Image (cartoon, rainbow, N blue to C red; front, side, top):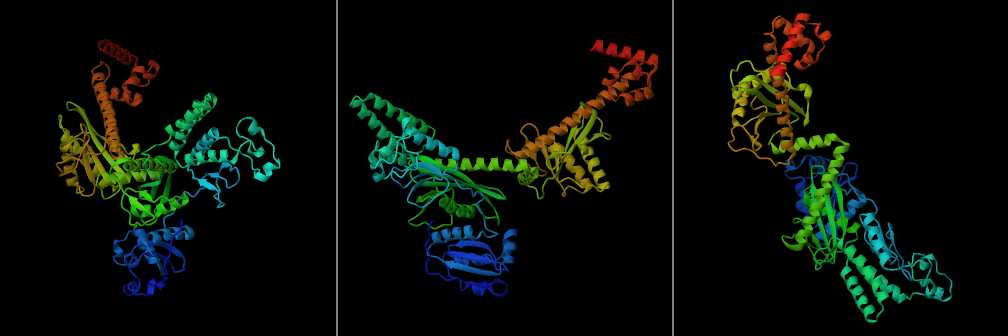
Length: 618
């Protein structure tokens, strides 16, 4: 892609020894490209500007407002040079060219650098049509590049089915054909070629096929279909029904191909569409090429962020690179937002609000969003720590926390009408259950069904112990319940003096509302959000762990109290039985030989009678 340079001046100066206020006065308010060099005189950054003085000065004025990576860059700058150009478009193109050539350390680079296939119509008599990865400026016509090899083969196979073309590399000049230097081959015999090598096909007829092929490759499919329909009508009028049927078969193939293509309004022609999606480390740019109402090219490329660039800056860098790579000369570019690039007679930007162009932009945005999601999933499969970090950062953002919630604890109470009350706590570390840290509590100070007091006791005992043992506190505490349970937990945290050291929230089950202390309005998260799913997992895990413990306690205490009423079995014997067999189920399933370890024959008989009576009554 060409660019124009006006007469220009290149300035060089040492950043470490100059007064930037004085030096900035020497830089004009003109569009251009600036380059930063380090102390080894290595080029480390290239940038463009519609106003060089303002842009270069912004790096040194208010340095504290710059992000961390940019501050590192500024500290390494030892020399600056810049080039003045005529227009901002020229600066844009020159910047891209210099970045590709020098690959500075702190500049964003497109990661996808593979060679794409083209379909070429060779510059020769009776031109061949084939695919290649080499773009040679020899007068041949190139179409593409195609981001998908399979897509390219679909188009090429369609062309070969519709139009018989030669595939040999013979020099089919008129003189060679007239002298009879060549003989027809098997391709002619099976109908794939009309035999121009022996003069069986004229150049005019061959060129007519090429004209249709060029229209198909340019997206002008309706032009070809109309021409075929005219051919059918002419053949039928002359009663050449066999020829009409052959043309009809071609038309059906072309219609079938067109039905599988993404077709938009035919008035939209020669348009480029760009959209972008990004996260902290990467950006993804989608490109659609529209010709005559048909999307003929689509590709999504990845960029790695270097200096926390904005999406506007990243897209401004990507557009010229992608357009040059795909040899696009479209004058209209559809983008999702305004770019800091001046328009001129060669290029104009459109930000559609309604209509077909808006639908095209939305299609591009869907593609880039899907690509970003799939690529991040691939990264996370290869490196699970990336997924963990992403989830924790999203939780930090969603829950308005100052730190990452790497250690989360969740409380839940269980009881039946106040009987056998217990509390359970589950622990998640790095968004995953840490089951060795799960704990449960037998309630000691609460009598009767008092859920708030039970929660207050459990929270106090948990964090009193952590403080006494000098163990780290969690970053996030989740209370299973609404405002009442949350208030009870907060009361204990205040008594311990740690209410400001942790984030504590309550979750109400009915609407999945999240409550914060002192906030009368709950927070609602998207039902599909990963943050809410983690919180629900914590809540459900706490409930499961608490219910299991509650049932075991209830079963154990019920069993103990009932066994103590059996003649010959006292409290000491019951404890021995439970210590040996661990559960009621194992006692029931134990053989007499096993029971003899802790019971005598009389006690075993009494135990069997008890189990048989309870099973009949149930």
